[in-house]
Structures are given as C-alpha cells and as structure tokens.
Image 1 (tube, rainbow, N blue to C red):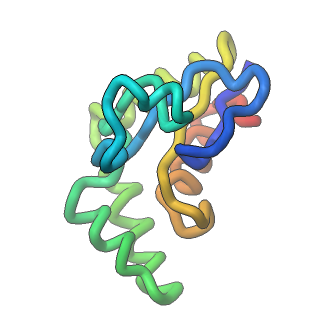
Image 2: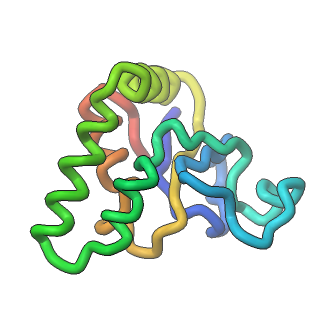
Length: 128
C-alpha cells in the first residue's frame, strides 16, 4: 500500500486508488460531475493546499531564492495543528490502502506536491 504523488489531470496508474486533489481551486471549465472521470480527482482536499497568499507566491517563483521563500512559507502552514494532523492521517493511511495526492503544476520540482512528498515521508508514509 502506498500514497502516490501525481499531477492532476494525468492518466491514472494501475492500482492508484482514490485520487485526492490538494489544490486551492477546482479545475476551471470542468463540471463537478466530471472531475473523477477526467482524472482530475475523486475528492477535493484544499486543506493541504497552500493558502491563497502562498499559492500566489509559488506561482511567481523565478529563482532558487523565490522557491526557498515559498517552501518555507508552505512548510510553516503545514506545521499548523490541523494541517499537521491531516498529514499524519495520510501517512498512516498509506500503510493500509493505495491513494494519490496531487496538484495541477507541470513541474513537480517547483510545486507544493514535491514538498508534500517530503512531509509525508518524514511522517513515515509509504510513498510510491
């Protein structure tokens, strides 16, 4: 059993399980009833998305310094009690079922999902 880190909107892999969208906003122009069938996500879970302010900071990253500032701010948000408990829950679930979490960004290296991967691993998640 594992949690996979994915780009939302891409074709699902075999045995991926439930796909969780850790994004601030749903995909534009897609009817809610088609989110799952179009491989966006099965469940929208903005609790682990960057805040609007932090998301805007991440979208404007142009340098390593900018990325470091975004990373620091997002990690601080994920250290808050509710987010931390959500991460603990997902890490524990990864030992019992397959599921995926993701975001829309094309480049995972400059997306909060790369940080989410690290945070889950630090909590003992099985990441595939």
